[in-house]
Length: 114
Image (cartoon, rainbow, N blue to C red; front, side, top):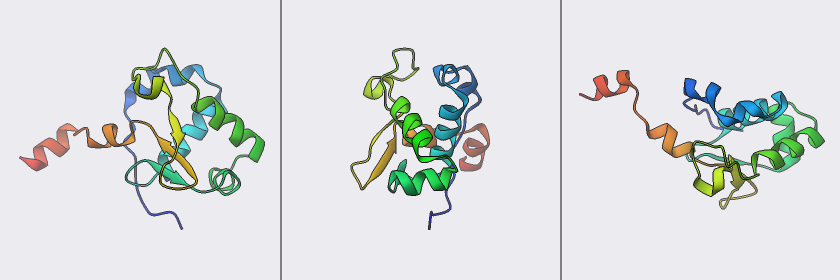
């Protein structure tokens, strides 16, 4: 069972180089964000993950391959702009920059903290 988590999704993603990708690739990335754990890991076999994100296996694998490619136009050049890499914590993937974005405080969070 996938733990109940959430990912922060910033509006600037709509102006990012991710928008140059096919809709299926964008959908896959958003779904990986949605099912990632608190450290950005998405653990599972490709078959299980494809089923979870509701994509045919060949489509899922194609999307993952694209998301693992370097992106010279990415706003972040961590891992050469790749959006996901193979997870070091199990079979599956790590969403690059997941923790960085999760730690950005919104204005409401800053007010609540103060």
